[in-house]
Length: 428
Image (cartoon, rainbow, N blue to C red):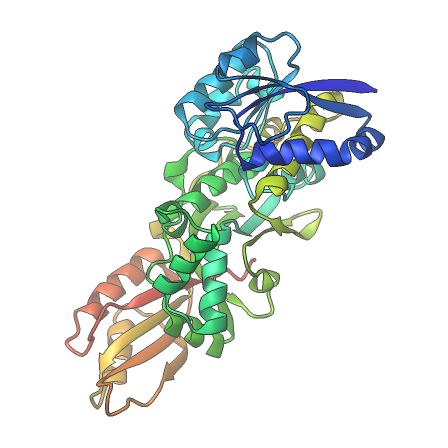
């Protein structure tokens, strides 16, 4: 039996979840892993007397975690970037193992932090999809596989918003306000609803499973602000649900990585992941389709991933760091720019109620050799002079679709901004 003594930076919900899990499941952890966990020191900006520190020493100086010889593993759970980055750097320089849930730091500095000693001393399972063991899944369970594709619902806020819009026909702004009230969205929700959070997580998965390099600039990002209840209903009529996805496709031509809204067929597994849950679906050459699903956030859910990293560090002789696994099978693939990505498209075109408008729309698309796979055009009402034409196109190169959209938007029959969504790749 090995005892691992922990030093925790931060006293937020994740740190509290760590204390709760150790107190409740300490004996179970010992039985399963042969590892006994004990928190010996906590550093936080301010004390929280209401939290039982289970005998750990408290201070306000993060440096105390590095200087305490009793601390075997540091847990960086304070968030933010500057102090967290300095703590991780200092721990690695001191040859001290450290676990973090900080996706922003990893996205910006992952290449530096996972090099050298970081390959063995740094763990970050909780940085992507909360309780879901996706990083250990890629670096461990699927390490013998070539990953062909990955698609994930990796932002619970977006997933919750779409679910409420669909279930209750509630407009986006109202659902967002309710999500903020319930704590599912921040006071400034832009990080979630503009796709930035999903792009950070996808950058980590891209590095670990496909390229070996952390580079946010290689991920195309689009948010969800433009989606309306009408889009959700039209998608349903066409046999789809709208989800915000992180998508990676790996082909002989290269790797494409994108985070945006997509139409997912009703019979797909990801179409039925609801609420604030996350899910990541991977297609690999040996294992085929695998789906990882579970809570993407929350104190104990994230703490579960953090403690899984601690146990993995204690048992490191039998495990490889996921970064090493990625580098072992990756030979600098070509990264495909978004302009060269092909996808089918959903278009909702608000048009004036005039004869011949459908013909004008289809004529404009035919100029770019874009075919239509499905169409919806409901009757206009006397009180509503604008009618939506909804189209599903065949697969089109991104730069061609963008040019076609400019042409469509310039037509005098188009009464408002066109909404364009991509259809999830058939490979998923």
